[in-house]
Amino acid sequence: MAKLFLGLDSSTQSLSAVVIDADRRKVIYEKSLNFDQTLPRYGTENGVLPNRDPLAKHSPPLMWAEALDRLFAQMKKDKVPLGEILAMSGSGQQHGSIYLNGRAAGALAKLNPQKSLVENLQGIFSRSTSPIWMDSSTAAECAEIRKQLGGIKATAKATGSDAFERFTGPQIRKFYQTEPKAYGQTASIALVSSFMASLLAGKIAPIDFGDGAGMNLMDIRKKTWHPGALKATAPDLKKKLPPLAASGKVIGKVSAYFVRKFGLNPEALATVWTGDNPASVIGLGLIQPGQVAISLGTSDTYFGSMKKCQTDAHGEGHVFGSPAGGYMTLICFKNGSLARERIREHYGLKDWAAFGKLLAQTKPGNGGGILLPWFDAEIVPRVNRPGVHRFYLDEKDAAANGRAIIEAQMMSMRLHSKWMQVAPEKILATGGASNNPQLLQVMADVMNCRVERIEVSKSAALGAALQAAHGWLVQAGKKPKWEKIVAGFTNPIPNSEIRPNLKAAKIYDKLIGKYAACERKALKQIG
Ligand code: XUL
Image 1 (cartoon, rainbow, N blue to C red):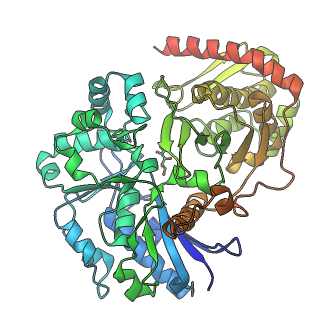
Image 2 (cartoon, protein in one colour):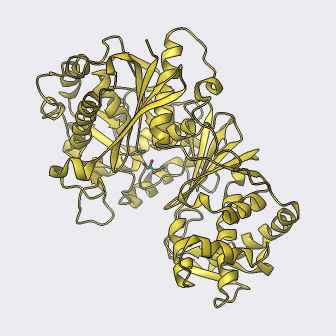
Image 3 (tube, helix red, strand yellow):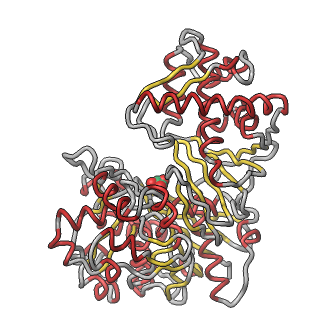
C-alpha cells in the first residue's frame, strides 16, 4: 500500500488539497475550489463578505465547512485513493477567528454522514461571521492592548509581534466590547486552521504554535497562553481558548463522518493544522535556521527559519512558531508588485522585459539616486500617509527610476530584516516577479547572498501534507528528520542560481546607510 498523506489549505479565496506519495516522493493530486465560484450562495467577493465598513472584513465560517464537504466529494469523484491516506493536516489563512457556543463540541462529536456538514453545524456559532486577516478595524483595541502590555517593544517581546489590527487578540477584544452578550455565549474560539482541524477530528482541535503566534495572545518563548495578554484582551478568555500544541501533532483518528461518507480509512489520523505562512516555510523546504525566502507578489514578504526567538523592537516584523520546531519570521512589505507596476506604467514600459532592459542601462547604486515607493500605506516601515519620495533622483529619468524602485525594495528588506540577526546563506526567490533575472541580480547584490528561484505550486497545502507525514511518523514512535521529509518535494529551479557581484555588493554596503537616512527623513516629514 502506498503511503499517502493529505494536505489542505483553507485560504482567503479557496480551499486546496495536495496528496503526496511519501515513498515515490511525488505529488499525486492537487485541486483548488474557489469559494466565489463554487459556493456563490454565500455572496462573497474574493472570499470576503461585502461590508458597509471598508475596514471590516469578514467571511462566513459555514462556507469553509461546505467547501470541505465539496472538496472531499470532488476527490472521491476524481478517484483519489482516499482509503490509502494515512494522515492529514492543513493550513489556514492566519489570524481569522470563529466563535463557537456550548453546542459545538457535542455537534462535532456526532457528525451525521446522512447530512451535510452545514446541516450538522447549524446552531453552533455564537457569531455568524468571522473577522479575517484583511480586517483593519481594531486600531483602538490594538492601542489598548499595547498600552496594557507596556508598549510596542514589550508587546513584541511577549507575543512575537506588536499588536496588529488583523491579529486575533484585538479582534476578540472588539467582539467583547461591541457584542458582550454574544461574547459571553462563546464557549470556544477557534482560528481558521483549528476550526477546519476540528471538523476532520470531530472534536475541538488545539491551536498550533505557528498560527497561535498570530494572535497577540501566546507567550512566544514559553509557547503557552500569555496571562497578561489574555487579561489585556477580554475577561474569561483562557476558558474559551483550546490548548496549544505542536503543528502536525496527532489529535486522533479522523471523524467517522469522513470515513462513512467519502471512504477514508477509519485508522487515518487527523493532526493539528497551522497557518498558511508557517506551512509555506515547510512547503518551500526552509528547514534550517538561516534559510530565507523572498516572495515577490502583490505584497513582498521576507520569511525564513530562525533558531533563537528574536523579536523586533520596532514592532514591524513577526515571529511565529515554525512547524519544523524553533521559530520563523515574517516581514510583509505592502508596496510590492503594485509599486513596481506603477513605475512601469508611469514610464510607459510595455512589459517586464522592457523594464529589465532599462535596469541594464543603469549602474548598481544608481549614482546615489534613491526612491521611497510608498504608493500605498506601507506596513514596513509603518507609513500611514502614502506618497513617493525621491532623493538625488530626477523624476524624468526613466532608467534611474526603474533601478531606484528595485534597489529601494531590496535595501528596505535588508534594513528591516536586520533585527532577526540571521545572515541568510542563500535566498530562495519565489512569486510572480521572481522570473526577472535583472531584479534577482539586484537582490543578490544588495543582500550580498546567493539567490535561487523556486516555484512550488500550492506551497502551503504541500507543507501541510509534509506536516501530516511528519506527524504520522512521530505517532509511530519514529524520530523523523525534516530534511528527509521534504527531500524531493522542494527543489529550486535547476541552474537558476544568481551570485552576488562583489563590486556591486560593496557599493550597497555603503549606500544602505544613506538609504536609512533618507527613510528617516521621509518618515519625519510625514510625521
Ligand atoms: C500574515 C497574513 C497573511 C495571511 C494570508 O500575517 O496576514 O499572510 O496569512 O492568508
